[in-house]
Structures are given as C-alpha cells and as structure tokens.
Amino acid sequence: MIKLVRSKIAILAIVSSTIPSWAMDLDTVKFRNCTWCHGESAQGYAPAPRLAGQTERYIENQLLSFRAHTRDNPFSKQYMWDATANLSSRSAHDLAIYFSTLTPKAANDGDKELANAGRTLYENGNPDANTVACAVCHGPNAQGIRDIPRLGGLSYYYLKRKLEQWGEGYHAAAKSPMPQIASKLSANQIEALASYLSFGK
Amino acid sequence: MTAKSVRLVLPTAILAAVLSVSCRAQDPAKADFSQQALQAKIAYCKTCHGVSGQGFHGSTPIPRLAGQQPQYIENQLRAFIERRRENKYMYGVAHVLSPSVQTALANYFHSLNSKPVGGAPKELVAAGKKIYEEGLLDANVPPCASCHGPEAKGDGEFPRLAGQLHDYIFNKLVNWSKERGQDPKHPDTSAIMQPIAHNLTKTQIESVAAYLNYLE
Image (cartoon, rainbow over all chains, first blue to last red; front, side, top):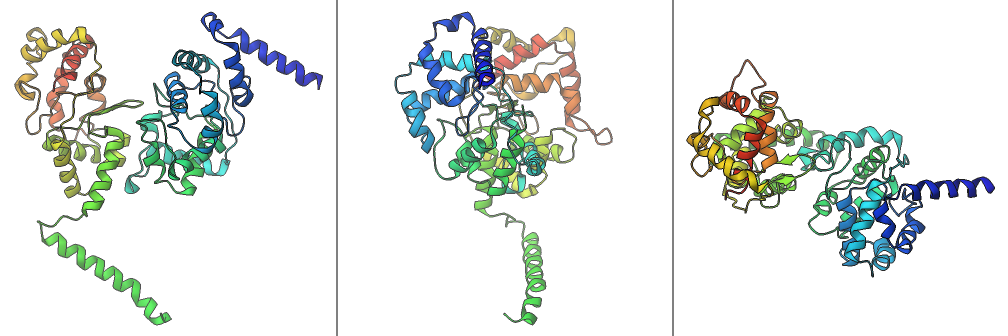
C-alpha cells in the first residue's frame, strides 16, 4: 500500500517535472480531468487510449471532433463529449502539445501469435482485396505524422474496437478515410493488426 | 447433389471459366474486368492518392495523379511491376493489375482535374519558374519546359508536373538513380532524367518544385 502510494507520488513528480513552463498556464483542472481515465502518465486505461507521444495535430483534431460531436462511438458519446463540452480551442491546442511530448509505453496486450500476420497486413495491405498498406500513411513504424495518428504500442483492445466500430458505421473525425478502409477488414485481419500494433513503440 | 455429380462440378466449373476467359481474350473490345471491379480499384487508388487524385501527404508524399498523361501512368505501372522503378508499395499495387485495368485507370486519372494542393514555400517560386523556362546552361540542364511543356502539362511519356506535390518532386529528383532504371539489362526512359537530376542542386530542385506545386 505504501509502496503503491510512493510510486504514484513518484510518477506525479516525474510527470510534473516534465511539464514545460508555458504549460504552467494550463488550467490544472483540465489536466486532472484527463488523468482520471487516461492515466497520470497518459498511458491509458482500457477503453481510454494512451495519449502520451501521440501526434499533436491528431490529438487536437480529436478533441475538436468530440466537441463537435463528430466522433460518435459509445465511449466518445458517454465520456468525451462531456469532457470537451467547454474546452476552448486554445486549450485543445495546448493539451495536444503537452500530451505529444510525453514518452509513450507499449501496451503489449495483443495476441503474440497473430502479430506476424498483422505485420504483413500493416506493411503490404492486400492489393487483391483493395486493402491499402497502413504503413503508407501511418509510417513504417506506425509512428504517425502530422494529423495521422501514431498507432505503435496502442492497446489491442482500443485498436480492435476502433476498427470494428468504423465497420459498424460510427464516424471518424472529418476527412478521415478510416471508416471506408476499416469496413473492408475481416474480423481476423482486425485482430491481427491490433495485436501487431500493440507490441510497437 | 449426389457424390457423383459433385465430383463433376469442379472440373466443369474450371472448364467453363477457362472457355469464357479465352472467348473474352479473343474479343479485344471486351474488357476483362467489370465496371464494379474498376470502381473498387479506383476507390482503392484514391485512398492514398487523394479523393480527387490530387495527391496526399502521408508518411511520405503520395503524388498527384489528376490530369496525368495516361501514357506516363501506364509506363510507370509497368516499371513498378518489372522493378525498373523501385517502390515496394506500388509494386504490390501494380502487379495484380491486368493490362486493360492499367489502361482504364490511366485514362480515368487523366480525366480528373483538381486544384493543386499547394503548400510549397512561395518565396522559391520565382527562381523555380526561371529554371523551369530557361534551364541552367552552366550545369547542362535543359529547360524543363522543352520536354514537359510550357505549362508543365506533359506530353505522351513525359509526365505532367503541374500541381504536383513539391516534396514528392524533391524526393524523386534527389533519389532518381536509387529508384529508377533499377534493371541495368533493361534501361528505360528514366535514363533521360538521370543526368538532369544529378546536376541540379537541392536548392534548385526545391525552387522548381515550389513553382510546379502551384501550377494549375
């Protein structure tokens, strides 16, 4: 018990020491609202994805899309719509910068036996089935760029549900091609991809 | 179905498929693909190349295809397949395309006409225009316009450059000999650009690319 408390304090101390000075203007309340679900070091818990190390523009776009109710899957509706209801664009921008600077940890929670199949699909797609290679946009190491998210190391459960939900008709943030891409994937392909990516960086 | 009739189904089906394919092959007017298959393939191309074929900045710049010379597209698809032009993603895409699908895709993308995505540094445009129109005599670089056209629309196997992504142009020119002409036993038209790409400095390439980026 004491050990747990000590390590939590240590995490808080480490995290707060990495906050750059401009972010001291950030409303502390907003940051704590994020940590309830996304974790104190923003590595994520279950359906709340890791935010640490995510690309800045992606985070910002998602916050704005929650506020605009564009992203509409059940957890978005239940949690993120309220969380962003009063979020200013400036705060969204600042939060995005902050989270993007945190060091991400890999979830490593996928199925190891499916990871190889997932990697083949990630790197090559399936030209016969008109499935694009994820790497073309998300990068060879799933590191993302600009407004395209980093996928490496995200939780298997989160990735799997996102891919499935796009196939179920839920919307992505504006201009994202993911719904039409994901709806063509089979259940096996989704599990393989989500597994492979969960072991990434 | 009885066991006996089931055993005949598969060979009969194969025979029917073979006969129908060979019949179509004898009729050059009939394509070997359905309109539905073509539309699906087009949607697949557009996932990376942009909803209007305008190109897209993915993890790497993905080129504009809208308004491209169909002969050039077909040549590049062949080059990817034969690995004279090295690109692992495009090899995967291209080698499953039949020649008639390649032609149909080339003609389709040629017909698109979208606004350039822009984004190149505007301060380089003037210098780029000068290089494009006049070349660089001291560096043995002919005017680009002499082959690519005064408006960079291309001609036949010379590609359209107008509206192309500036960082795509930069990457291709800088990496020309690493990516093109990769089969020394089968040299191709990419050899024309090799000395030009080699003689241009990085700044000159950036300038020309910026100029072309905004051309409609």
